Structures are given as C-alpha cells and as structure tokens.
Length: 505
Image 1 (tube, rainbow, N blue to C red):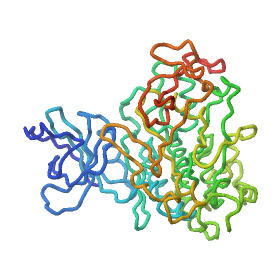
Image 2 (cartoon, one colour; image 1 turned 135 degrees about the horizontal axis):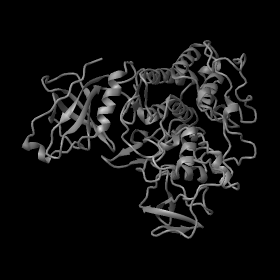
Image 3 (tube, rainbow, N blue to C red; image 1 turned 180 degrees about the vertical axis):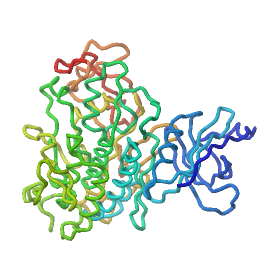
Image 4 (cartoon, rainbow, N blue to C red; image 1 turned 90 degrees about the horizontal axis):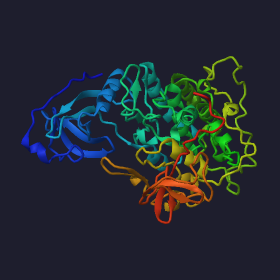
C-alpha cells in the first residue's frame, strides 16, 4: 500500500475563483494535476488526476472535500490506509489544499474503472453464477474492512463499481466508514447511511431511543452484512426487501399490516444456493448472518459448483413464459439438502448456506403488495421517513428496469436497458435524484395517518393532511422520506409520545 503524507500548499491569489466542486483541468492540488471531473456528492468531488510532474502519466482518483477542514476525510484516509484488499482502492496520498476559504482536505486513490452496480445489472441478463462471482470479492472487501476493526456503513449498489470487460467489482466510498477508536463526528441517533439498507436492529434502536438524549447507534459488521444482503436482493429481484419494522412500532398501531416477506426465489429464477445466502444475510438475528469472510468463501464455492440452475438467466417467476415456472409451480423456497446442525456455523465450508428463512418476518396474515417495485407500503416508507427526518434527501433507487419489464422485448427500451447510465443525477453539494428509465417515482400522502405519526392538533407550521401532521413542504421530485400532496412534497411528523409498549430507559 502506498504511503500517505500530508501536503500543505501556499495560498495563491488564483484560488480565489476556484471552488473544490468545479476545478478546471490543469488545476494543481498538492502534487496532482486535475484532468477531468468524474462526480460530485454532498461532501466531496472526485476528479481524474495525474502526477503534476508527469505530462502523460497514469490516472488516479482525486477526491476533494467541499467543506474546509472536513474531518470525514481524515477518518476515511485512516480507514483506507489500514485496508489492503484488491477490491478496495489503495490510498496514495492525503493532504490539505489551502484556499482563501480555508484548507480543503483531499485524498488520492487508485482509479476504479467501471460502472455502478445498477448500470452493470441493467446491461446484461445475469445468472446466479455471475452474481455470486461478483458478490464474493465484495464480501471479501468487507471482510478486510472488518479485520481492521472498521465498518463501511453505506454498502449499496451506488458504492460498488463494476468493470465492464471482466465484471471486476470495487467497493468504494468509505467516507461514511468508521473504525475502532475513531472520533465520533455526528451526534444524530443513527449515523450516516442509506435508509433502505438499515438493519432491523438499527431501526429498532431508533424507535426505542428516539427520545433519549445523547443516544447514538454504533453499527457493526452485522450491519454491513445486512446492507450487502439488501444489495444482493435488489440485484437479483429488482426491488427492495420490505424493511423489518420494530415490533414496538407495530404494537403502537395494530391496524397496520406490513407487506409480506417474499424470498428471492419466489420472485425470480435464482439458484437455491444464492437464494439461501441472500436470506441468510437478511436474517433478523445479527449472529445468524455469518461473517463477511465466511460469506466470501460461501459465494466463491457456490459459484464454482456445477448445476444447470446456476447458469440459468435470472428472470421473473411469471406464468405463461416458456421455460419459466409460474409462482405456483416454483419449487418450495430454500429446501436445501444437508443443512448445518443447530449448533454449527451458519455457513459450512462446503459453501452450502442454511435455510435462514425462519429468521425472516412471518408473512402470515400480512397483506400482499404488487410487483414489481413498490414492495414497500406507505407505512414502511413512512417509518424510514421518520427515522431519518431532518437528514438530506436521498431517494431510494432499486434495480428495477429489466426485471420489471422482462415480459417485453428484451432488445428495446421496454426491457429497461436504456437511460440507466444517467440514473444518478448528482448536483455538487446537493441532492441525488432518482430516474429509472426516465420516470420519477413518488408516493401520494396516504388516506390515513401512518404508524408513529403525530396527529392533530399539529404545531405550526405543520399541516394537517388526512388526519396526520405533515411538515417540510418542498418541490418535487419527492424523496423516499416524502409524500406528494397537491403538487408538493411533505414529510410525516413523528409523534413525540412513545408507545405504551416501549422499553423503559
């Protein structure tokens, strides 16, 4: 791993008109020369850069903070410096770029080539073997992170770049990462992350401690594993699994009925080994998910195993299509041979994952929801809205196109293969908007109040809509934490009084 060093530049009058989000080609940051801008998010801009001493040198990824003295960059640099794995970018340098507005931290890493996981998924009809070969090194990258007492905290398709020619994945963006002994940078109840990838234990912690001053959830390796499970579920089914709501929240509103849990093999033609590993990663019990190292080994071994199901295209379980079993005709979910004994590790050395379905939500009595995308009902979305209220908007963006429209012509736009290269429309320092095949996805304000939502009388400037309190109106497109009402986007207001079933603190 390349050594890192801090660089402090002398202030130059020419910097007065430069902002880290818009550095023109030729700008020198430390000993690196900007070639072109690649992307920009809420905290940093990424550029292709080469060494300033070389006219035509190798290209690297230069990440420059958008805010002076941003401590996230120091933490990210330290975490990357500890990790040595071929599927994690190697850190080459970190330093401070002196600017009239203050010093801006920067990082220089290996350039990761490829496209985001969602784009890779839409550009091909995947097989279970291809998916397992891709997930194995991602799990290995997480194992290397966990081995140095670190956590990624934002595992998702956007942060996995896949090389086109050989499907080589790289786990990116450790800016939200953490490691043992690192200073706490945020005081929110939940640390930075993507709502739909939150683990059940994180959601429950939020619900039970939402009124406890100073409460702060500390994600661990099991949270990364759950997020990888959500990512894998999206990759094969084209939709998110329904989040697991805390039982205390459900008890506070007995009339609310969450959607049924659908194992991946009920939705698509996926091989039993991959389906079982996905279910295992989504287990309610953190210890049942297995370690990242065990998962990496299981994915590798399952990908090497023979079997026609492993090489079948992953397509929806729909009736009336030749070669595809209907849902009624599909084999019983996850009936695996020689599952491990109760007291044995969750993942066997032979690479056969056990049936983790018993750790999933009980679907009995739950209302079914329509395929393909909104497998999350208004109540589930509402809870995610409540648990991240006040944070920046970040719409959920599942992998939907090709699976949802696979009954159409595979060669045309109806197959969901067009426009995905522009799925993430990012504005520097701003929000990320969702676009799937050019369509915005929004949810109307439900006709009745949501579980955990405040009800009238509402405080000013809150608004009463359909018997619930709503606030923070904003212009569309609406994020996952917002609902549409008469042309504007509203977020539900959390009821300040805890439910009667909450634990005493």
